[in-house]
Length: 248
Image (cartoon, rainbow, N blue to C red):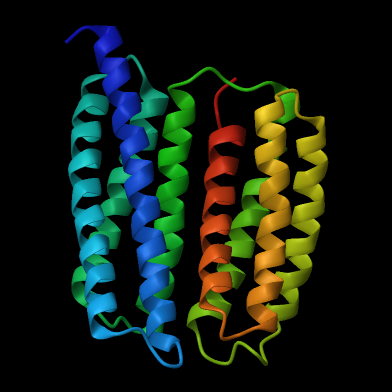
């Protein structure tokens, strides 16, 4: 296998893995919200979502296995890439075990681990995609510390989405305030970006995510707002991993 062909294969597998993980994350969110809705989704709709979830998860396992084999072969030439792939493999294995043990109706702790693990896996694949492409200009990058703040925001959001007692929890105002702060901070970074496409994408994300979050909070019955908020948040995490954590 030629180096150029292998590099293209790595990039395609990383992109496919990222797309499949996002499908799994969104299908999982739709299942969770559909079960909690009033009235809940029909059995046919839940079965269809579970089929999409299971198919995407199975294909992701195949993609990360192939990616792991290629990264293992290139571990001496590209150690950073190999380390990122190893993280994706470990996260995939852990999530697979949790999924098997927890079943179709996981307890809150397992659902929380699935949500955060899925976002972490998506970020790992996005980072891998970034390492296989030219780096962005420094002005367009997320500054140090943004990953930790996004991680905390995801943890608070998962707490509110899955664990009971969300309405009376101090996590709710903390999630809202941190969301506003992150939106302002990311908007400032977007305005400094030297790439118009990245600037527009980031500005759109930092406007859409909090608006959808407040909409879902104001209208608790709005499944569309809640699901779109989860999707936009996942894309923001992926964008952060792709744009900030790439080698210069």
